[in-house]
Length: 326
Ligand SMILES: [Mn+2]
Image (spheres, helix red, strand yellow):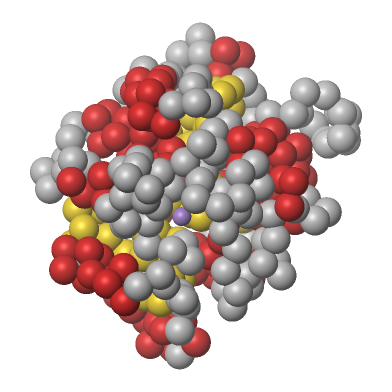
């Protein structure tokens, strides 16, 4: 018996019915089963935290639509994600479109109370500011681990700016705030795919002085870059880790639908390979953010986001299978 029952695509076609994330059942449809859901996915339709193009508030709907074609079996991990994990779409978090801080409170409170205390949270943005709320909720429900959560961060940008136009809450600052609050441990944070140009040389200072491991886009042009990712992963062991994926880490040729596009990014193939290199990490929460459907072409960015969701879940499925059958 699979832990997650999907509609049979040979009976209910993928283009029919109400679109949930990856066709997973709605939380209310699985909530009274006797076991808790392993992962609750939820949308955060919010983009008031952007510094450039708005529109990511429409991301969750676009990802629900594009993710209808995400299937269930991972070839590289040799795991059926729906057999291994109980998954659901918990709908959208409440937001307050004129108010960033209020929204972060609303989203965090929604996420803290979602499903069972053991359920892992996957936020689907929305701009990157919302990562803060899901990190806070994940930190709270995993018992406020000493020193904070580890973080694996895919992004073209560091997102550690102190303030923009006097505003301390935006998509430029979520990790700065999460470090200050102690929710995440910068010495166990890996930022993958960062690239310039930057506004100023000292934009790197916070990450460097607080101990964040940077594997830049440039580093990934050489084998040493990927080795650095693998070494970081090996050192984490069982540390609870949060994974955050900004689609602008992928080149605009593959992911044009985003608000702050950055040239020279990863291909979608490279991004998937790096995600698969994370096998073994104890991922306790995640997000995928910054899909901007108005700028998307043929839904390719939303489709990428749907597959990022799948790859993260496949990592957890593979890890649990390995623990059961080492
Ligand atoms: Mn970002």
